[in-house]
Image 1: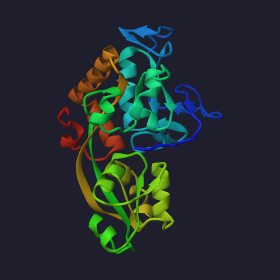
Image 2: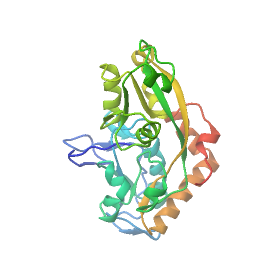
Image 3: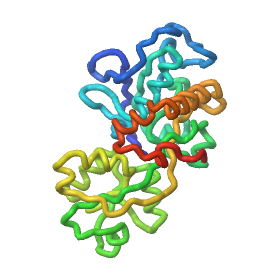
Length: 282
């Protein structure tokens, strides 16, 4: 995913209008049971009456500011966890490198992290992952005028490739012998393609799907490769926080069973794909 070194951490409020550094988190639960309590249904919370989620913005369609509110696929799923606990979700925008180390979880600033994050053995050393909730592929998006028809063409034709820093997509192409230009955010990746700094980019396919909903992007860019990297996304909690991990997994299981997950998927991702939506546990 992404890194934003030196960027000021911003607290994004779930219940108030945008003001200064605060943003409203859409779709939070309205229930107030457990309000004012730091332990709710056996789950200890970093702050009373709220489920504090670390994320990294922007990363549509998983989390980004839409109409002045932080919304997205991950946001909607974690809202279900908050609703089950009878509290409201509040989002803290943090540098992505902290997700790998679990720093904000260990410090007690956040209860969990939701950032379209791939489950990896390395990351499992520092945090506990939920059950997988999404299987992602890496897309290669190119400028239609570039003459690139595949990832291999990028190298063969001497073109420049971009990727988001600190991400599995960047790691993947580096492992294939490429030396991509690194960008700090998904927005910067797209801007690099728009301005001709690079002629191709590799990034999670759902992100590309979101970009191509914009007619201007669809007219100028095309997907030439969809790389099956076996990536599965998971939410994370502090090592040993079994009570919260169980609450997250229960919310995911219930949402898939009653059709709520499908509705959220179709709203933020697109046509429902059961194999992507319900990957086997890693």
